[in-house]
Image 1: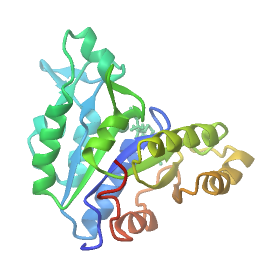
Image 2 (image 1 turned 180 degrees about the vertical axis):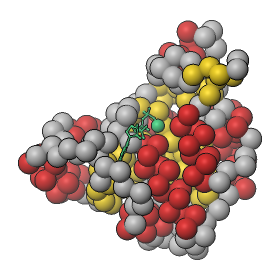
Image 3 (image 1 turned 135 degrees about the vertical axis):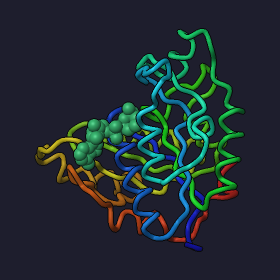
Length: 235
Ligand SMILES: Nc1ncnc2c1ncn2[C@@H]1O[C@H](COP(=O)(O)OP(=O)(O)OP(=O)(O)O)[C@@H](O)[C@H]1O
Ligand SMILES: [Mg+2]
């Protein structure tokens, strides 16, 4: 495990692209490699209420995959009922998100664990507040980003936009995972997209996750190595 970086920030080209699915498989894969994995979903929206408590489904999936025994308040400092961007859901609840609270929980968890997996919400510019997006958070966490993207038509644009925004703030990008959330082929776009994205952006496609994949195999190996080079990168 000595070749591993200290963690990864999982973002996506959109909501519903499979960030949690991929994060879960990465956590399981890293544990099979013997890593002590910590997870975090800083803000979760669209939580259902059960017995008076909001249930953060993504957070619980991540915790199960990582075998996390950490306090829910650290793993998921913010949760909201409305299925909206966190800043908007918070505002409608009459509250707001304090990035410092998220960063404190992250520091606490990252001291306890060898490798942290942090899942965003939606895409990279989704706001936690009007002045603080997941891009700002990725920067403050000092984690490299992993981008989960769709396989079909439209993904070249969405993925290049996401890469451009991350690069604009010097957030290192570990790579892109193309994930099939549906059991159907999207035709020639799906066949040509990976090479086009790689060629134009210079960011590697770490792998393509088939629908129903139970393990990520080589993708996890690619995340573990080469040695971390993100610390001190950028500003
Ligand atoms: N490779 C896959 N095979 C089968 N089902 C998948 C796969 N990837 C994602 N799914 C399913 O697609 C749906 C959306 O995936 P997921 O919840 O991981 O997206 P997300 O990007 O985390 O969304 P959010 O922005 O809400 O956090 C889920 O029902 C998930 O189980
Ligand atoms: Mg999710």
